[in-house]
Image (cartoon, rainbow, N blue to C red; front, side, top):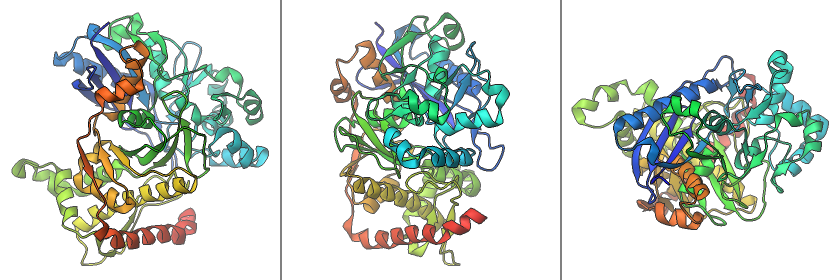
Length: 503
């Protein structure tokens, strides 16, 4: 057996690949970008072939670094963004771009299915409401709008399932990502074929469900030639990016919670008993026999990336002079503004919003602008808006019986001490930062480590690899300011939501 584990993450904006030793140390890492296409209002899609090209590019960078050789990889784990609907034919060829989690094109289809079958009945089985972000309505959309494509579909895959297929030739559906389907029994962890027939999903489109750490195949000769990997390297089924990040945050037991600071925001609370709420997202954990109650928001690190791209020309021009990145400079501007942002409030709904409001028409809003407001106010308002969205999700989870007392923050946003402290202050929860930039790839690698036998179980895997870097305690002196800001945040959406649907 080789000495190292490889994790591959198919994110929304880029593929990340990282090689870890048994103790979770990063030996080599790389990434490769690919685009999101927005051909119409409410649409967001990607080309699966561009995912594969990104993976090949990222892996080649690792081999070129000289830090690790392909034959030293003991196992490969993969994770990916939620709710893809990769349509492949019998030869395994992708037939069309896949709508991703930000896509809302199938709203009318959801409305029809909900009326015909009943919202409550669907939710009782699937643990998730029938909403356009999920996989089910996207497949029905193919049938209505792309009949020639639909007639040639052999299987529908999630993005990590597609990557597993490209690596091994095996077609699988991991149990964690099965939550995208509303014919999936969330209690029993299996397909409900009667519901599939009622919804209109042919059984033949559904891959076999496997545990996330199951070795489903090995790297084929064709994949080895394209990626540089060694033929025969074991590959596990993998899972959802948020769930792999949750594993790498050390979340194994009831009530332990990951705070997600990647492109999207949100949280994942580990449950040992089934508790679903239609305002939130329910999935199986990548760890067998456990669930995750999730909040998934559009506004996360992407909010700051958007702001930096559109409004930070000056900061970018000064990076060489001051030795600080544009994001670090924006962070300093925000730190100079007091908590509560002196009445400036931001709704981070830049591509509609998911939990807990589920509104594809929601819009981003700055409220409270005046001549007294500066760029620093705008930056801080963006950060606070994301923190308020997190608080909203945590409050709904508490109502559902899942109380998160400590947050374990992962993702690029946790690199900002200001933003992490802000989330602690806004939510009233202590925050532990066990890792930041490599959580999803490490979680995928840990699945491979358990599947291949490098670790005897998840307790051992987490005990060896997850290391706390810092912690934050809520500052109760700023609670009143953030409570006022949160009240404004909630009231703004309620006041504007009907207007948002019109314009």
